[in-house]
Image 1 (cartoon, rainbow, N blue to C red):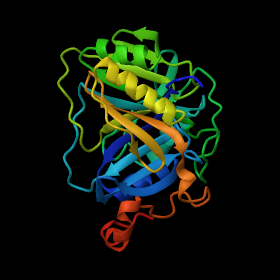
Image 2 (cartoon, rainbow, N blue to C red):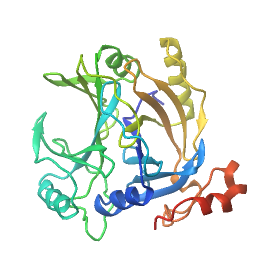
Image 3 (spheres, rainbow, N blue to C red):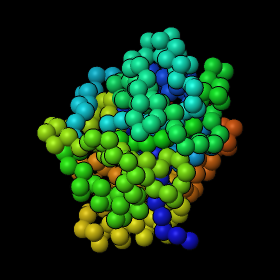
Amino acid sequence: MENKILGLHHITAIAGDAKRNFNFYSNILGLRFIKKTVNFDDPGTYHFYFGDEVGSAGTILTFFPWGEGIQQGRKGSGMATEIGYSVPKGSLDFWQKRFEKYNVIYNKPSEKFGERYLTFLDPDGLKLELIESKTDDNRKPWETDEVKADVATRGFHNITLTLNSIKATAAILTEIFGYKLIEQDVNRYRYATDAVENAAIVDLVELDEEKRGHVANGSVHHVAFRVQNDEILMHFREKIEEYGLSITPQIDRNYFHSLYFREPGGVLFEIATENPGFTVDESLEELGKNLKLPEQYESDRAAIEAHLVKIN
């Protein structure tokens, strides 16, 4: 079995109001709500997961909704600044009309690297893009009554990191993760892995005088990369330690096993396994319908449920 990074696993961001966040991603954007749990380090707040039908790696967007009144994040260097979703060619007209209907802030379609894309903001100011990928994306989408398969998101296309200098971050991508520089447009450098067909792209934007960003409401907390299993996960832990970077021990996140390290440009990276998956504690049909708690908090379920706001 090859020791490979298999593109993106998930992306985690910070939101304010939980109900508003749930409504935007499940109803307006049409993602499947696949897991309702709590923050491992703060069981008084939710941790939401959105994705495709089964929560496939490369489709999973997760949120810590910390509640109203939290500090707003500030975009800048050392951050993941744009999340790109793959959508079918010709679907951007549908999305423009949908965003107008629901008063979503967006920019008119533009193009980069030969791909049309539509930029928009979620209710907390998180910047996302819908991208008509120039390569085929045959991933099965999640459908809703209003967002059908011919326009629905397929999962991640790319993640964009903004950095003062891309050199050290690019070295992590190429020397450790096996990515290659495939395209460049002015100060945007596109790296991709050939280990997977989709969710394979990391864009590095170099802005040497950009001020440091601040991770808070409406910003990305960390970017997770995918490996097949625990053995490969620990191979990468050894590799990153040998490279001279500090990395956590393996952490059990119930639905995957993880390592965390901060890459030299300042972005928090995670490496996460495919196993055991999101059906480990509820059936495929029931995904997202029940509050699932880490084992250490199960004895406090009544108090936790009483504290958490009802979202659906």
